Image (cartoon, rainbow, N blue to C red; front, top):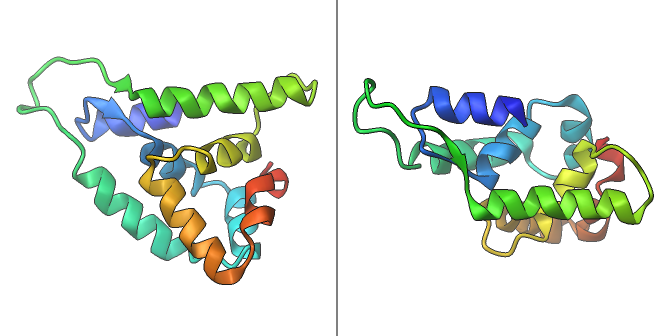
Length: 134
């Protein structure tokens, strides 16, 4: 999570989005392995998300002082992941929990791209479990 904020702030983005989160998750080997096992084109997904994030609202000037804030969708994903962990009577949110929560975020480009890829390979249910991404 911290890397998401650092990355967004470093790019001058006012808001941290679900797409920022997924991009940071794509740096983690367990997530990459899980997505690849679901026949997801990780490099293609990364490229599309990078293009989207590059278009995120940035500070008008490098000297402008601002606090990078999470979007409501970002907050919903985190809340959904926490609820998943609580339901399973666990104490720690893992990458798989976040990935599963992202997939339930209806207005997210990241979720749309992941679900489109998994539908093509008929691995949507496996992707939604997210267990192998922990």
